[in-house]
Length: 332
Image (cartoon, rainbow, N blue to C red; front, side, top):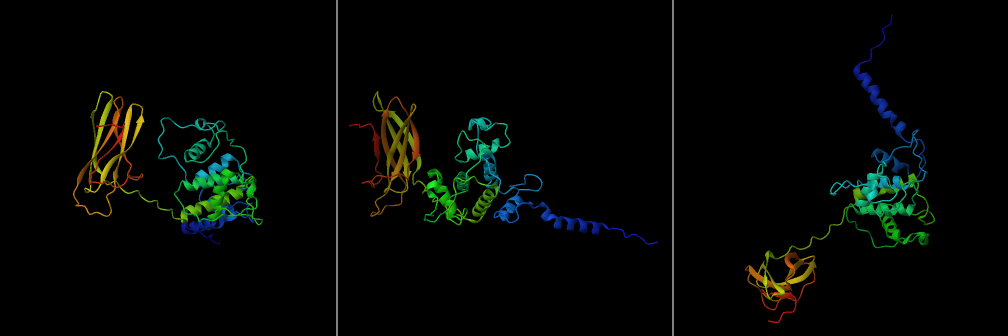
């Protein structure tokens, strides 16, 4: 009597593994073969950003509505409000007149709005979205990831006159970056409803751009040369208060002045700045106390403001450690 071969655990595991490896196509969408966006659709699927609509279908030529568009952009570019603090739980109705608070996409709309996407208050989430609107939102979402350098060129479009002016700059940047492409007739078709395939192409290209393109480093403003800035005040007259600012400068060449006074409520916020030294003179490197004076109405409380070191400054002081004054014209 012939013995039936026994399946070992390793054999079973091998069969299971082969099933997993061979079933990759089973998880692919059945209706995207030959679609221009098939590669991008599959990449977004692998990233967990898109999924089918049932029966293993993606429906690449189906139109995209506002809810789907913003969900794709928010999820695809990882927008969030993790670093924002709210006095109360944010609700969609705080921002929009039609988006329901209990809608599954309500938080998506809140996140998009809080990240600066230009979404109308009366947006209808079910309304189909044009190609130019999707492009505009997508570019705004990209901009939340940092500053990117775009070449100074103008991409001519055959249907430029059909583009909404407010969206033109966003479309230009996407074209320059290679995220968006014109068709064979050099048209963008801005007023056409965007399809699921077209949205997938733009979004996947945007993700690739953000991942591979370094952001432009912004210059760090120079630190203030002043230290130990203090404010004191005293009555100059029954109607006027004399405000004195003192600070420590690196050497006697620096001057000091009141840059501006902001009257807010009952406070007079006194801002200040250093005056640069004369570049043609040499100064002993000795810490020097500098002084500036201002006069304000006695009805206001003087408050030390901020250093306006980066704002336009007056000429170098004629004398080292010179003081400046501002406020009411006082004749002593």
